[in-house]
Length: 236
Image (cartoon, rainbow, N blue to C red; front, top):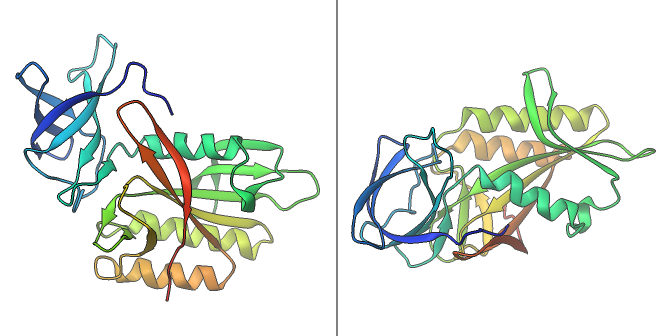
């Protein structure tokens, strides 16, 4: 994913009210920008550190700037715009770079499915093969030593998605949970058992039932964000 024009570098003052952040612009002006992340952003915030944001050409937005990248307290980059995750994964899938998900001729987005009235991020289909349901989760929580974890807060919605994926496997289809890791310091991914033990328990249960789990890490800069490195998922 290319940023055209490249992202603007500022300095983070603080995040507040979940959807807002104050930054210092390159001109030294304090501005308020939109924060497109409803999560806790735990371990992503370092006040006074460099951050990067985009500028919308929409004339109707109250806050035309959108926060995209943060510098974490341990000096890595984190992509905090959760709306980018699906687009990044779509690029990856359409390029045919995920060996485990190759061989499907059609990709559909946001398809309604399941008894709990969910929408799957991607539905991959190919005549003669079971349909493949792909759910994407954005990972920015880094607990040190390369360990990335999900979720960063208790996620009842995430648990619902796991149940829906398991139901698809039980119905004879494929189901894949794909962690989109937007954190340059993460080298492996695991469930955040200390934050949401129920999610961790359920994740292990659905994997044992046949749900597949993958993780890919992004390379990030002011010019582009690209998923380029597969990572192991640790459930032991």
